[in-house]
Image (cartoon, rainbow, N blue to C red; front, top):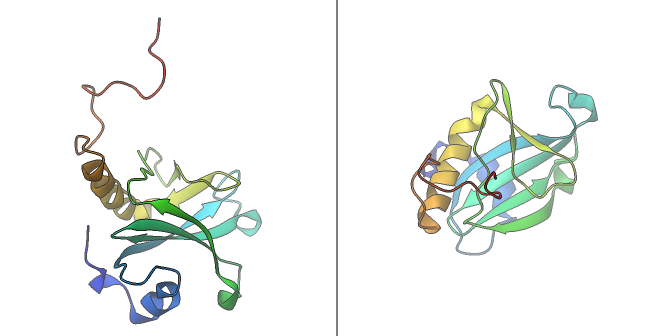
Length: 138
């Protein structure tokens, strides 16, 4: 997981208040929630704050950063991928509406999932040797 050195001090100060004492922020990226990511004016905004111990979902009201609030705190072992879209990918987050991440943040999601897979003692990436998550076809 990349070090938080690439994050601005302003972003660390803004989102640092949502993490528990002693947690180290590793990544921060935004997702849109809604039926389709290109309908930006109708979509909700959520920041995903990845720390060394958890994944924190922070609601982001448009134009009102003082009203940010924690929507959920997930275990660090939470897998968000795999990613599949060209410009946008739907990711696995417990939001009321589907969550979409831009290709610009794909490396952040993949890095977070790599650490989660290590914590779960899974192979570094999904492969054909792992059984599928659902029931096997008859």
